[in-house]
Length: 327
Image (cartoon, rainbow, N blue to C red; front, side):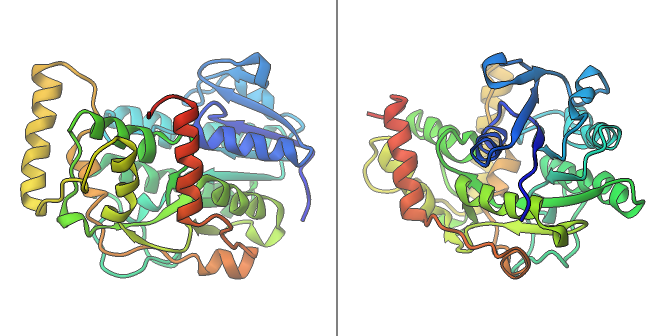
Protein backbone atom coordinates (compact mmCIF):
# COMPACT_ATOMS: atom_id res chain seq x y z
CA UNK A 1 0.00 0.00 0.00
CA UNK A 2 1.20 3.48 -0.89
CA UNK A 3 0.45 6.60 1.12
CA UNK A 4 -0.35 9.50 -1.23
CA UNK A 5 1.83 12.54 -0.62
CA UNK A 6 -0.86 15.06 -1.55
CA UNK A 7 -4.65 14.63 -1.52
CA UNK A 8 -7.54 16.84 -2.63
CA UNK A 9 -10.88 16.20 -0.90
CA UNK A 10 -14.10 17.75 -2.21
CA UNK A 11 -16.88 18.32 0.29
CA UNK A 12 -14.14 18.47 2.91
CA UNK A 13 -16.41 20.27 5.38
CA UNK A 14 -19.02 17.51 5.34
CA UNK A 15 -19.38 14.41 7.48
CA UNK A 16 -17.56 11.97 5.20
CA UNK A 17 -15.21 14.58 3.76
CA UNK A 18 -13.94 15.55 7.21
CA UNK A 19 -13.34 11.91 8.11
CA UNK A 20 -11.42 11.30 4.88
CA UNK A 21 -9.33 14.41 5.51
CA UNK A 22 -8.51 13.47 9.08
CA UNK A 23 -7.45 9.94 8.12
CA UNK A 24 -5.05 11.00 5.37
CA UNK A 25 -3.59 13.67 7.64
CA UNK A 26 -2.97 10.96 10.23
CA UNK A 27 -1.22 8.93 7.53
CA UNK A 28 1.12 11.83 6.82
CA UNK A 29 -0.42 13.11 3.59
CA UNK A 30 -0.74 16.79 2.79
CA UNK A 31 -4.49 17.36 2.39
CA UNK A 32 -6.25 20.24 0.64
CA UNK A 33 -10.01 20.61 0.92
CA UNK A 34 -12.65 22.37 -1.14
CA UNK A 35 -16.17 23.19 0.01
CA UNK A 36 -18.74 25.93 -0.41
CA UNK A 37 -17.40 27.70 2.66
CA UNK A 38 -13.69 28.15 3.22
CA UNK A 39 -12.14 27.09 6.51
CA UNK A 40 -8.54 28.34 6.38
CA UNK A 41 -7.62 26.71 9.71
CA UNK A 42 -8.43 23.32 8.14
CA UNK A 43 -6.89 24.17 4.75
CA UNK A 44 -10.36 24.08 3.14
CA UNK A 45 -10.76 26.47 0.21
CA UNK A 46 -14.01 27.95 -1.08
CA UNK A 47 -15.35 26.51 -4.32
CA UNK A 48 -18.51 25.24 -5.95
CA UNK A 49 -17.70 21.89 -7.55
CA UNK A 50 -20.93 22.06 -9.52
CA UNK A 51 -19.17 24.62 -11.70
CA UNK A 52 -15.76 24.78 -13.30
CA UNK A 53 -13.60 27.36 -11.55
CA UNK A 54 -10.38 28.33 -9.82
CA UNK A 55 -10.90 25.57 -7.25
CA UNK A 56 -9.85 23.05 -9.90
CA UNK A 57 -6.25 24.28 -9.71
CA UNK A 58 -6.09 22.86 -6.18
CA UNK A 59 -5.64 19.41 -7.75
CA UNK A 60 -2.26 20.37 -9.19
CA UNK A 61 0.40 18.05 -7.82
CA UNK A 62 -2.10 15.82 -6.01
CA UNK A 63 -1.62 12.08 -6.17
CA UNK A 64 -5.22 11.42 -5.20
CA UNK A 65 -8.55 13.22 -5.53
CA UNK A 66 -11.43 12.05 -3.30
CA UNK A 67 -14.83 13.33 -4.39
CA UNK A 68 -17.33 13.30 -1.52
CA UNK A 69 -19.25 16.49 -2.35
CA UNK A 70 -22.92 15.80 -3.13
CA UNK A 71 -26.45 16.75 -2.18
CA UNK A 72 -27.21 14.90 1.07
CA UNK A 73 -30.98 15.14 1.12
CA UNK A 74 -34.08 13.36 -0.08
CA UNK A 75 -36.02 16.56 -0.63
CA UNK A 76 -33.80 18.66 -2.92
CA UNK A 77 -34.88 19.72 -6.39
CA UNK A 78 -34.08 17.59 -9.41
CA UNK A 79 -32.02 20.46 -10.83
CA UNK A 80 -29.83 20.63 -7.72
CA UNK A 81 -29.15 16.89 -7.89
CA UNK A 82 -28.29 17.26 -11.58
CA UNK A 83 -25.91 20.16 -11.00
CA UNK A 84 -24.15 18.96 -7.86
CA UNK A 85 -24.36 15.19 -7.39
CA UNK A 86 -24.11 14.41 -11.11
CA UNK A 87 -22.59 17.45 -12.82
CA UNK A 88 -19.75 17.91 -10.34
CA UNK A 89 -18.12 14.60 -11.28
CA UNK A 90 -17.05 15.91 -14.70
CA UNK A 91 -15.44 18.98 -13.14
CA UNK A 92 -13.63 16.89 -10.52
CA UNK A 93 -12.33 14.45 -13.13
CA UNK A 94 -11.15 17.33 -15.32
CA UNK A 95 -9.35 18.88 -12.35
CA UNK A 96 -7.66 15.59 -11.50
CA UNK A 97 -6.52 15.04 -15.09
CA UNK A 98 -5.12 18.55 -15.43
CA UNK A 99 -3.43 18.24 -12.05
CA UNK A 100 -1.79 14.99 -13.16
CA UNK A 101 -3.34 12.98 -10.33
CA UNK A 102 -3.06 9.20 -10.33
CA UNK A 103 -6.48 8.26 -8.96
CA UNK A 104 -9.99 9.59 -8.39
CA UNK A 105 -12.15 8.06 -5.68
CA UNK A 106 -15.81 8.87 -6.33
CA UNK A 107 -18.34 8.42 -3.56
CA UNK A 108 -21.61 7.05 -4.88
CA UNK A 109 -24.02 5.15 -2.62
CA UNK A 110 -25.85 1.87 -2.18
CA UNK A 111 -28.84 4.00 -3.19
CA UNK A 112 -27.62 3.52 -6.77
CA UNK A 113 -29.20 0.04 -6.66
CA UNK A 114 -32.61 1.59 -6.06
CA UNK A 115 -34.84 0.51 -3.19
CA UNK A 116 -37.03 -2.23 -4.67
CA UNK A 117 -35.19 -5.57 -4.52
CA UNK A 118 -35.47 -8.76 -2.51
CA UNK A 119 -31.98 -10.32 -2.59
CA UNK A 120 -28.51 -9.21 -1.53
CA UNK A 121 -27.03 -6.70 -3.98
CA UNK A 122 -23.51 -7.19 -5.36
CA UNK A 123 -21.38 -4.97 -7.55
CA UNK A 124 -22.28 -7.16 -10.54
CA UNK A 125 -25.96 -6.23 -10.25
CA UNK A 126 -27.43 -3.46 -12.39
CA UNK A 127 -27.86 -0.03 -10.89
CA UNK A 128 -31.26 1.59 -11.27
CA UNK A 129 -32.34 4.82 -12.95
CA UNK A 130 -35.78 6.39 -13.01
CA UNK A 131 -36.73 4.86 -9.69
CA UNK A 132 -38.91 7.82 -8.78
CA UNK A 133 -36.50 8.70 -5.98
CA UNK A 134 -34.27 11.60 -7.13
CA UNK A 135 -31.48 10.90 -4.63
CA UNK A 136 -31.15 7.29 -5.85
CA UNK A 137 -31.26 8.30 -9.50
CA UNK A 138 -28.63 10.99 -9.00
CA UNK A 139 -26.24 8.59 -7.28
CA UNK A 140 -26.64 6.03 -10.07
CA UNK A 141 -26.11 8.66 -12.77
CA UNK A 142 -23.08 10.15 -11.00
CA UNK A 143 -21.04 7.00 -11.55
CA UNK A 144 -21.18 7.21 -15.33
CA UNK A 145 -18.71 10.06 -15.77
CA UNK A 146 -16.08 8.52 -13.50
CA UNK A 147 -16.32 5.09 -15.11
CA UNK A 148 -16.30 6.62 -18.60
CA UNK A 149 -13.13 8.58 -17.77
CA UNK A 150 -11.49 5.38 -16.56
CA UNK A 151 -12.59 3.42 -19.62
CA UNK A 152 -11.22 6.16 -21.90
CA UNK A 153 -7.85 5.99 -20.17
CA UNK A 154 -8.06 9.57 -18.89
CA UNK A 155 -7.46 8.67 -15.25
CA UNK A 156 -7.87 5.69 -12.93
CA UNK A 157 -11.19 5.92 -11.09
CA UNK A 158 -12.69 3.88 -8.28
CA UNK A 159 -16.32 3.96 -7.14
CA UNK A 160 -17.26 3.60 -3.48
CA UNK A 161 -20.86 2.70 -2.61
CA UNK A 162 -21.19 3.30 1.13
CA UNK A 163 -24.00 1.76 3.13
CA UNK A 164 -26.06 3.78 5.61
CA UNK A 165 -23.21 5.83 7.09
CA UNK A 166 -23.58 6.68 10.76
CA UNK A 167 -21.40 7.88 13.60
CA UNK A 168 -20.62 11.18 15.33
CA UNK A 169 -21.91 14.16 13.27
CA UNK A 170 -23.89 12.06 10.78
CA UNK A 171 -26.95 14.08 9.73
CA UNK A 172 -28.99 11.53 7.74
CA UNK A 173 -28.80 8.66 10.20
CA UNK A 174 -28.08 10.31 13.57
CA UNK A 175 -29.08 13.93 14.11
CA UNK A 176 -32.06 14.17 11.75
CA UNK A 177 -33.84 11.03 13.06
CA UNK A 178 -33.08 12.14 16.61
CA UNK A 179 -34.59 15.57 16.01
CA UNK A 180 -37.69 14.03 14.43
CA UNK A 181 -38.15 11.80 17.47
CA UNK A 182 -37.77 14.76 19.80
CA UNK A 183 -40.56 16.47 17.84
CA UNK A 184 -42.72 13.30 17.80
CA UNK A 185 -42.49 13.21 14.00
CA UNK A 186 -40.69 9.89 13.52
CA UNK A 187 -42.23 6.59 12.46
CA UNK A 188 -41.11 3.36 10.84
CA UNK A 189 -42.91 1.68 7.94
CA UNK A 190 -43.07 -2.08 7.35
CA UNK A 191 -43.67 -2.55 11.09
CA UNK A 192 -39.99 -1.64 11.61
CA UNK A 193 -38.81 -4.74 9.77
CA UNK A 194 -37.17 -2.91 6.88
CA UNK A 195 -33.52 -3.82 6.31
CA UNK A 196 -30.90 -1.29 7.40
CA UNK A 197 -27.28 -1.67 6.22
CA UNK A 198 -25.14 0.45 8.53
CA UNK A 199 -21.50 1.34 8.08
CA UNK A 200 -19.72 3.12 10.89
CA UNK A 201 -17.71 6.08 9.60
CA UNK A 202 -14.34 4.63 10.68
CA UNK A 203 -15.07 1.38 8.85
CA UNK A 204 -15.99 3.30 5.72
CA UNK A 205 -12.74 5.25 5.82
CA UNK A 206 -10.74 2.04 6.31
CA UNK A 207 -12.26 0.66 3.11
CA UNK A 208 -11.79 3.95 1.26
CA UNK A 209 -8.10 4.14 2.12
CA UNK A 210 -7.62 0.54 0.99
CA UNK A 211 -9.34 1.31 -2.33
CA UNK A 212 -7.31 4.49 -2.81
CA UNK A 213 -3.93 2.92 -2.19
CA UNK A 214 -4.12 -0.42 -3.96
CA UNK A 215 -3.52 -0.73 -7.70
CA UNK A 216 -6.09 -3.48 -8.24
CA UNK A 217 -8.89 -1.15 -7.12
CA UNK A 218 -8.55 1.02 -10.24
CA UNK A 219 -11.70 0.82 -12.36
CA UNK A 220 -13.55 -1.10 -9.67
CA UNK A 221 -16.74 -0.56 -7.66
CA UNK A 222 -16.99 -1.53 -4.00
CA UNK A 223 -19.90 -1.81 -1.59
CA UNK A 224 -18.75 -0.80 1.89
CA UNK A 225 -21.00 -1.61 4.84
CA UNK A 226 -20.43 -3.15 8.26
CA UNK A 227 -21.30 -6.50 6.69
CA UNK A 228 -24.26 -7.01 9.03
CA UNK A 229 -27.81 -5.99 8.20
CA UNK A 230 -30.21 -5.09 11.00
CA UNK A 231 -33.90 -4.31 11.25
CA UNK A 232 -34.69 -0.60 11.18
CA UNK A 233 -36.42 -1.00 14.53
CA UNK A 234 -33.23 -2.32 16.11
CA UNK A 235 -31.08 0.44 14.63
CA UNK A 236 -33.35 3.34 15.58
CA UNK A 237 -34.14 1.96 19.03
CA UNK A 238 -30.86 3.60 20.07
CA UNK A 239 -32.05 7.02 18.90
CA UNK A 240 -35.37 6.49 20.64
CA UNK A 241 -33.57 5.92 23.93
CA UNK A 242 -31.28 8.90 23.33
CA UNK A 243 -34.36 11.07 22.83
CA UNK A 244 -35.57 10.07 26.29
CA UNK A 245 -38.48 8.03 24.94
CA UNK A 246 -39.87 4.89 26.51
CA UNK A 247 -40.85 1.75 24.66
CA UNK A 248 -39.92 1.70 20.99
CA UNK A 249 -40.32 3.90 17.87
CA UNK A 250 -43.75 3.98 16.27
CA UNK A 251 -44.01 1.11 13.79
CA UNK A 252 -46.82 1.03 11.23
CA UNK A 253 -47.92 -0.90 8.14
CA UNK A 254 -46.27 0.66 5.11
CA UNK A 255 -49.49 2.00 3.46
CA UNK A 256 -50.48 3.79 6.65
CA UNK A 257 -46.98 5.16 7.13
CA UNK A 258 -46.97 6.42 3.54
CA UNK A 259 -50.27 8.22 4.02
CA UNK A 260 -49.15 9.91 7.22
CA UNK A 261 -45.85 10.90 5.64
CA UNK A 262 -47.53 12.54 2.66
CA UNK A 263 -49.86 14.44 4.96
CA UNK A 264 -47.02 15.57 7.20
CA UNK A 265 -44.90 16.65 4.25
CA UNK A 266 -47.76 18.70 2.83
CA UNK A 267 -48.50 20.33 6.18
CA UNK A 268 -44.90 21.21 7.01
CA UNK A 269 -43.87 22.37 3.54
CA UNK A 270 -46.97 23.95 2.08
CA UNK A 271 -48.83 25.22 5.12
CA UNK A 272 -46.17 25.91 7.76
CA UNK A 273 -43.42 26.71 5.21
CA UNK A 274 -40.89 24.63 7.14
CA UNK A 275 -37.84 22.82 5.80
CA UNK A 276 -38.07 19.11 6.53
CA UNK A 277 -36.55 15.81 5.48
CA UNK A 278 -39.91 14.10 5.92
CA UNK A 279 -40.69 12.73 2.47
CA UNK A 280 -41.88 9.64 0.65
CA UNK A 281 -38.32 8.97 -0.53
CA UNK A 282 -36.94 9.12 3.00
CA UNK A 283 -39.63 6.70 4.13
CA UNK A 284 -38.92 4.35 1.22
CA UNK A 285 -35.32 3.94 2.40
CA UNK A 286 -36.72 2.25 5.49
CA UNK A 287 -38.66 -0.38 3.50
CA UNK A 288 -35.78 -2.26 1.90
CA UNK A 289 -36.10 -6.04 1.99
CA UNK A 290 -32.43 -7.03 1.57
CA UNK A 291 -28.91 -5.71 2.02
CA UNK A 292 -25.59 -5.53 0.20
CA UNK A 293 -22.60 -7.84 -0.11
CA UNK A 294 -19.12 -6.66 0.88
CA UNK A 295 -17.42 -9.88 -0.27
CA UNK A 296 -15.63 -8.13 -3.14
CA UNK A 297 -14.07 -5.52 -0.85
CA UNK A 298 -13.08 -8.23 1.61
CA UNK A 299 -11.43 -10.39 -1.05
CA UNK A 300 -9.74 -7.68 -3.12
CA UNK A 301 -8.96 -5.02 -0.51
CA UNK A 302 -8.69 -7.02 2.69
CA UNK A 303 -11.53 -4.93 4.07
CA UNK A 304 -12.72 -6.09 7.49
CA UNK A 305 -15.05 -3.80 9.50
CA UNK A 306 -13.48 -3.23 12.90
CA UNK A 307 -16.24 -1.31 14.69
CA UNK A 308 -19.44 -3.25 15.42
CA UNK A 309 -22.87 -1.69 15.87
CA UNK A 310 -22.79 -1.70 19.68
CA UNK A 311 -19.43 0.09 19.78
CA UNK A 312 -20.43 2.51 17.03
CA UNK A 313 -23.58 3.45 18.88
CA UNK A 314 -21.66 3.96 22.12
CA UNK A 315 -19.26 6.33 20.39
CA UNK A 316 -22.13 8.17 18.73
CA UNK A 317 -23.98 8.57 22.03
CA UNK A 318 -20.81 9.90 23.67
CA UNK A 319 -20.50 12.52 20.91
CA UNK A 320 -24.16 13.52 21.23
CA UNK A 321 -23.70 14.11 24.95
CA UNK A 322 -20.52 16.10 24.35
CA UNK A 323 -22.43 18.30 21.88
CA UNK A 324 -25.30 18.60 24.39
CA UNK A 325 -27.72 17.27 21.82
CA UNK A 326 -29.10 14.81 24.37
CA UNK A 327 -29.35 14.97 28.13
